[in-house]
Length: 181
Image (cartoon, rainbow, N blue to C red; front, side, top):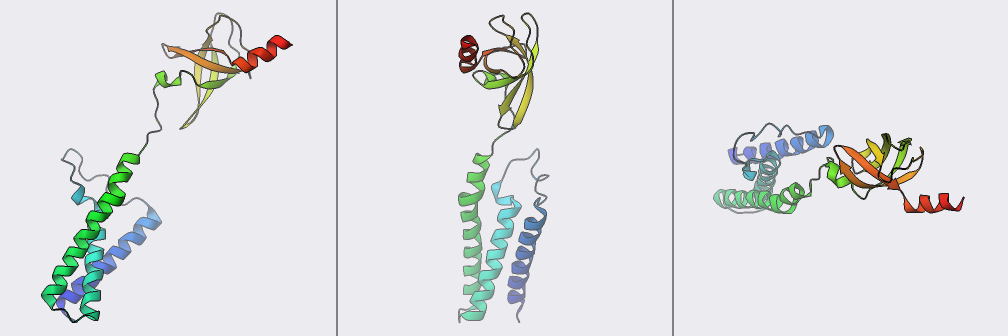
């Protein structure tokens, strides 16, 4: 076994071990890289490892199963490794970076949301409303926009948000049921 063949095997085994480690433990330790520096996608660990793994696999397979010269195998392995890393970036890493979403929200986004009164809202006071959001359910201080009391358990619509207080009105369906009673 030659030196290059050993390098190919080491790259392949290290790449497979890294993939197993990332699969089992999830976090790959890449968070600390690049803070305060220019973001260079080439230096993302997943791309470096995938390129090195493809380099090792291609080099080993081409050495064992073809009659290509050592220099041809090395060139082909480098091209295949770099090609896989570039493909991984454009097909996986870059699209996923745009797909990230935040669980945070701004109070101004609550307008139009439907909630449920968890603490009765008095005529001239504050109660509490439970609003379902992407990140889960949240409780907010609420006041009646119409100046009417709204009982606990009633569904309401957030009409306005001022000074971190939701101004709500009974959900139209709920209001029409109460008028019928």
